[in-house]
Image 1 (tube, rainbow, N blue to C red):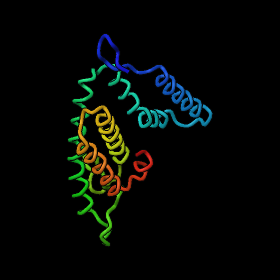
Image 2: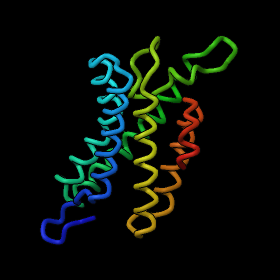
Image 3: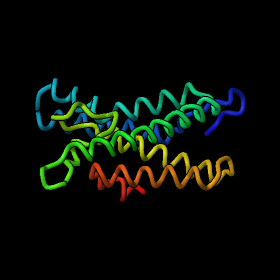
Image 4: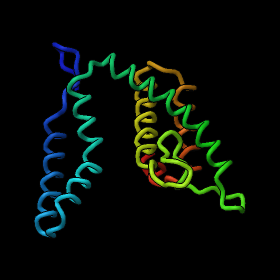
Length: 168
């Protein structure tokens, strides 16, 4: 929702309540299972980093700023299409099949390490959702949406991110 006065987005109370409830469930789970505080802190970081980032962006950015960020992410997705293509062609099992977990574009940790698919999935979801919303608001044309969705589908196919197909 956009505030009339400042033109900034605001985080709805329902989102704040949902995040607080999720945090409470995590905290109770940690207390009941009595595992390491360091492990809880690491899990908190992994589970909440994007939510916290989203809430900060929603409360500080104006609508025009969000459009600029989305345009940058769109270009970033296109760059990832090229890099994921290169990675899938150069990293293979020897039978011509690529290692999907190792193909993460700019989110890759190196040729011999996995990781980055979750971040890449967030990028694909954000760009796809923003492209569809901007198309429905008649702010962007159909080619913009087709490139965003087909680029995301292409990346999801090469790096074997099955969750993206369900999210789409």
